[in-house]
Length: 322
Image (tube, rainbow, N blue to C red; front, side, top):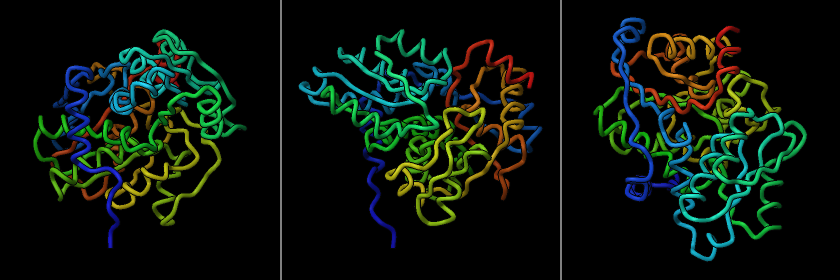
């Protein structure tokens, strides 16, 4: 017997109404070259063109917009390796409040600069020796701020699901929908939406092979913790899936594929050279899984969520040149 989900498709629809005119309706790309290469019809939802350069703005704004006036007057806190940091900072600015963001010391400088550029205060920590959740909760409590976590929050998950809602409303029924998995917020929102609109769709998550905490957890039937991963996909370098996101993904996700750093690098290069778009490593993992042949029971019409493109020129060049 399946348990009731903590986030519903109605929540995603409400989030879409809240985000209308605030978040971008991002474009969908197709490529005859890609179709011929994989032998299927492929559609790519380009969340790298979302505000702040990633899907994260959807969830951060949806959560922040539901805070009370009193909570907003005190400010918002978040913890993130980069994209949720920028998203929360921008959401706070849009709503006329302040943000304090806990970021890893080794977060990409471009993401730190962008977060500060939206007006947020940045506090750093060591991701390999310190617990960011505990630090973030303590920071929020100390300063009286409303904490918006990067994925394990119903309003964040519902907001992330709006990317799949837009996608499926534009392209129609797909045989499979592939999205990256970090903490699981995008995956959970995607799965809720996809299964509500098309119950027979196959939902596939993709993790870096050095950060396969969700795959291991699904196989074990419970959340497990791995050492903090070292991977090109810094946005997916997490040791354990979220509690709420795991409960959803355990019910709705059909398969988890793994990709190597070399496969991520190849997907970034393919996206740049053939699709003419820039993807950060985490934003390229879904495409990487398809290009590398890791999607089994091959579908005919495939959707991919390219989740973000926040990377500076120097880092991008270093990665694709390997």
